[in-house]
Length: 258
Ligand SMILES: [Zn+2]
Image 1 (cartoon, rainbow, N blue to C red):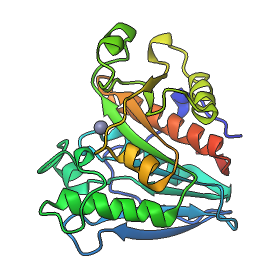
Image 2: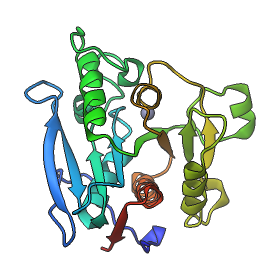
Image 3: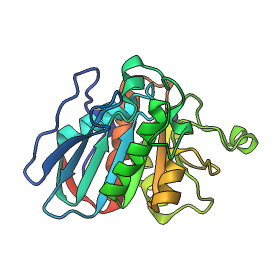
């Protein structure tokens, strides 16, 4: 069990990307996706003696949804994994992250599963990212995003394919036990009813990363959306909380101290 109090989580904001160090019980494998391309981006695998259970956390498929990237940095700094592996791709679309924009040429989340010979770098990046996920072969993939509108049941009933903040998104109308547990355990740490996370069913989109990971790679995948109107530090804290809860639900054993 990790012990956290939401308000006590300190966060790394606007610092240079720290390279996570090996800890007592895990070592770090560091490499890149898209080596020697204009979209080359780092990934980190924190691995104990046993490879599984295994979970992958990715952020910044949309470059201006930055809380997830900083949350990955924070978790990598303080976690000690003693059973299983946790992978992080903090800045999937690193060009968009550096420019603080959603996408550079095209929205990366509209071109999955990508195309190795695509004219746009986003096509090739999506394809390389899918290859990476396939090779890493995690039990779960969690995609970190942010949205501008707080979850609202009435608005959701009118428009199901709208992204809301403070949600866990699934493309299955039947919510998995894994997702329901993660949702309950996340909300235990959130006192304000307004800011608790909702599970949102989001209809299948053939070009989204999550749907391709589920359909093509047969790996369960969920999306976290924090509310972008909140201060950045709060959004990072919520993302850290969600990351830790999903890691715990995946069966990976770890301690978390700062
Ligand atoms: Zn997004």
